Image (cartoon, rainbow, N blue to C red; front, side, top):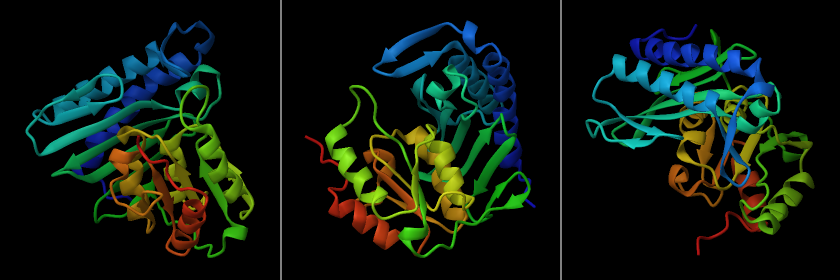
Length: 269
């Protein structure tokens, strides 16, 4: 059973309260007023309302902590603690009535991710991990898959769309993985992809061009489930680079080599 720490209770309460607002709006998705934030990047009233709820709940429980919010930007705090929040990961799914999206909340302590929650309100699955205490979905312990061979593995990814990302470069990575695995899945919510790696539902996940709030909670959940997460090129600063590879110990080397041989993460500039 998941350790019901005070931190767990704080994060769960914020996620579930925001989820009630999201589910209400998801039921009325055809009536949502939406605005364009950039190419293919929609922001809904539901998204912003969920973020306000999460920020209010977390600030009330832990006054003085800083924030890094997808919509609201960065708020300085005590310099030691920072919440990293994506109030609606899978916005495009949400706005198209596809029931696959999540709330992602991570706590960074002294520049290290200490805890994370990823909540899928449609399936009522709450993925949670706190450093040193293991990873769980609801009350069931999580472990990454034990598959040792790429040929038997299902790998998750995210595909850049419209003007975003280097499509020709990404297609080389995708072609390489498609040719060596049992299948590739693109489900449209990076936080849930990482949670699924932790749960053993996906054997690995890779993507380029992500933001910290897409990965922060998933990173600690994957690690506490016995998995590994790093940059595609093997570095450790994936929260900054946006290049990420998450998998089990047996696939880390072959999957990483496959992606690097296909071009790895594109270099800045």
